[in-house]
Length: 385
Ligand code: SF4
Image (cartoon, rainbow, N blue to C red):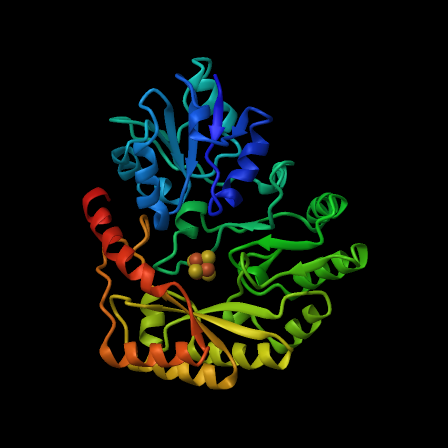
């Protein structure tokens, strides 16, 4: 049995560790013409990609066994089966990938989180990430240093898919994998984490753990450029302090620091269960600039409960302070408490101000594209969740 992974720019971060955990049993697909009868094709995709994946599925012969994984399939397995997948693997796959392949060969029981028509499964969570390589040798990617998040932001899939317990790689383990990358001539080193400044802790800011990690990395790999607090790792605003960023400035190559605000309304933040206040956003912006970074602050438009005026006022204030606004449109993501909430159209005043801020180079983002997708996701959730 031949097993292929369909790799895209978007899914390489989730596939690379799985390919490694499969110990050489998964090959990367170069072209659809490679596929023969009985081959297995693995997909991993986010909800933002479901239409493209749906179109692609139509081009794949029926006799190929198609398996979906990743955030969309995990959040809404029944929709992934409806799209045309034969199986859905829901959750974290490192521990179960060999069982899955054994099952397909008729040698093992199916993993508990495998779904197929009229056979619902569970969601596999809780892999000790340190037990597995963060990337496959032929697919080096940023090193995942933490998985899981104790916060419960209502629009976010992370705690629902990966659980609320933060699972960290130890500093020694991170150093081991950084060395592998550096030895391959890779100088730009990035990290994956949902909550960077909580590294090593239980969810609150953990300055000692974060500083120790970067002091060690800086000392051992003086020629490497470390990126932290910019994609694919973000900070929470209430964890940012001038002292912590000033110390990190010595080791980091990134100019930007990204953190989430999402709204300028205290009430909206409360309803979103963000767990921080507006004052934290303003203080984080000040501290970031003072420490010599450029803040990029995430906002979400079109939330079902939103005070657009307050959000606009905060965006303008932050932009005047020197921040860039990273604009998103609300996506009702499967498995989140807001999955069945209808996105709200943007009001005229906010729309005009967004155009102005964009023209001034103070706002950017994919929010327009996301607007169309948002309603489609809402409808899917209504039908399949
Ligand atoms: S948005 Fe960030 S802090 Fe909030 S639940 Fe998701 S990962 Fe955690």
